[in-house]
Image (cartoon, rainbow, N blue to C red):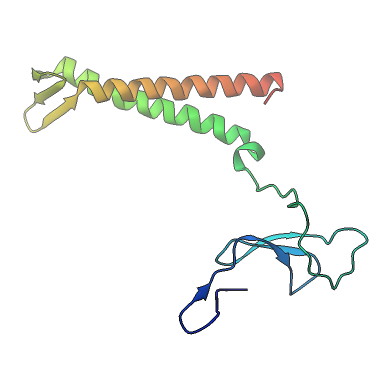
Length: 149
């Protein structure tokens, strides 16, 4: 089932929805551009040759990697939090240890071979996001240990 041409000027698009599976028994989902892998069994006590759409969409759940692997989400939060905090710490340490000139939130530091520009506002924002990621990782870990989701 694809776009079909009604006459020489008009192209008819088939809307997304559940349609009879021409290659098998039951229904298959058309996303508006192509057939998806989602299929459903025919309703009970129905004639396999009928093509009526079901009155209700089947309850098909897409796989969720975070629900199947919650430890992955916890580890990702810890790693992201640590990386963001390290990035922010390097920025703040650079400003504290080098010969720097400050203009508002922007600090420019010069060493023998390198000039570094640090924006203290965005470095602070990154530090806050790092703390939030670590906090979320801790909360997810506690929820996992207590058995709640």
